[in-house]
Length: 139
Length: 180
Image: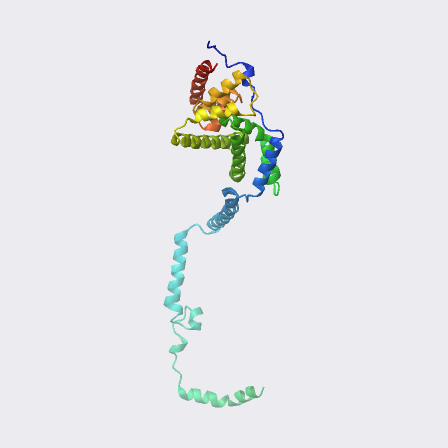
């Protein structure tokens, strides 16, 4: 005859299985041996962490430097460009074509190169200064 | 020692093996019984347990503590058991035999089963259940886990788990009426 069984009885929830004596200690030792023989690969984060830290440090340094330059540099960009243009125009237009003297004496109309010297005056000057040149060479 | 302390110890330089041995000691027995009730045979449960621990050791550096350690260990062991049962079932299908019948026979011949006739009938009925239903039933009935915890282990919704447990419970009642 079939019987109706209530499976909520506490004794049915008990564990009827058993293990050989000393099994759990032996199992722990066996697992320990197996695991010791294996080389544990470091995880992705363990490998990636130093690289991410390095990249982040560089990024922070770059941002700080960029922000410093931005803060301390003159704000009017067009004025700075104009100054550069003026300077460059001056060099192109005056300095290269002129000599040392007229570089400073910008108000002067004539240049040294434009003066005409008579060759006879040069010969006369050299002959009168021969004594001085000779004395200078003896020193 | 709590899971957190075990993991902190594991992350200390040169303490990995020691910490892992403590984890094995903490969860070995519990996981063994979970596996044993799923596969019936002591030898199969032992193989599955050892494989689970080796997998846990390999995967532990990647463990992000998004779930609790014991839930994570349970998941590894359960997946190992489900893969094993599927493989056995497929082999049994190819050799035109009934795998649940094989499990029943294993239980009948098991020298490490000390239960009475009613307990034997209950465990035979459990072994007749589909694998996932068996896992849900065992976790709820024997391990008295909350549905939320089972959901964490199996990645199934609580509603689906409740339905699964209800079906398993009914099937077992019917099986027991036939067996006793």
